[in-house]
Length: 371
Image (cartoon, rainbow, N blue to C red; front, side, top):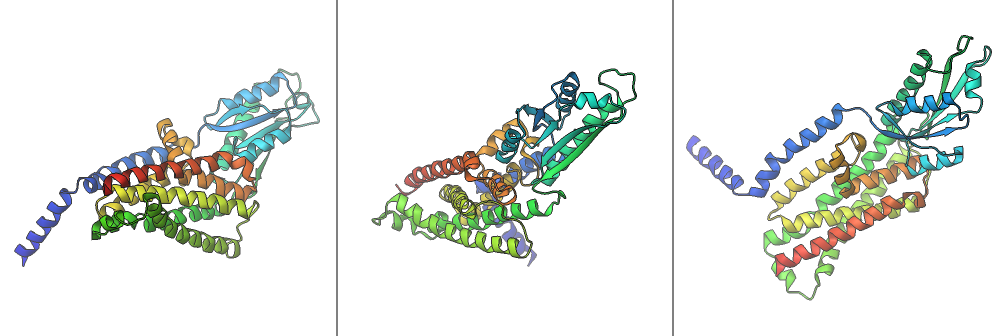
């Protein structure tokens, strides 16, 4: 019995080693994943862009701006002249928040009866980032006041009071962001698992050659393989959307039609990736393994677990090729912030381009496989 069992185990090991793609993904990909995740989780929020609306325009207000910019968590990236312009930057996602320094701020610090005030308004749709950014802004201003790094005065300083406000999520609850992110991730997982079997299953059972000699063109074949997983993904998305609205009472502040259109683009891009994997792999086991690793990479690079800004610069650039990154930003903005579709044009274009490029690559790859 032990001899027969040992022979079977040896046979399985030999069969596993003979599949170089499977060996590479099983042994190397997890190492890369743990390195990326370890670096991301070990770092805090850094370099979050903030707009400053400076109505005071005094040496003290400039010192406040410098103190904010000198923190690791905050980068002052815009100086709009009006509060409305800063609000538009927040709505588009160009900045995480805004700091408003009112007129008479420096004069109030020298008053015995008044307390100088600063308003910090943060996009609360991502509660973890918002909380850390608010804390950094408060610490920078209070440190400046405590160290008396302002204009000298004979009167004792009354201090600086920082009023904070979290837009779209006043309590900075983790729940809305987490549940909405889960919609994007689960839709991705279901769709890609259905789509990745499209071509490789035909190859494994020997019917791919039969399909290649039918009147179907390659694009028609790929379209047929893509439509079914997209339908499955869309049904899955709609069911989850109803659940999060009815059961969890997650707000829907934007256009549902805009969200639906972006979801179609997102599913198209993910299906294109899955079909490319399906044409490159030799077996369903290979395809499943590659999809598993691809899903882990997407979670790491999309901003699902940790902010993209904590990743190395090279990884931030690579993340632009991950559809989940663009869809996460879109669904969060539409549902929690009510962002109009015009403000999400970069994400829309990115999803469309990724879908088209991946489908063209899949067509060329399929041509080599069937010819």
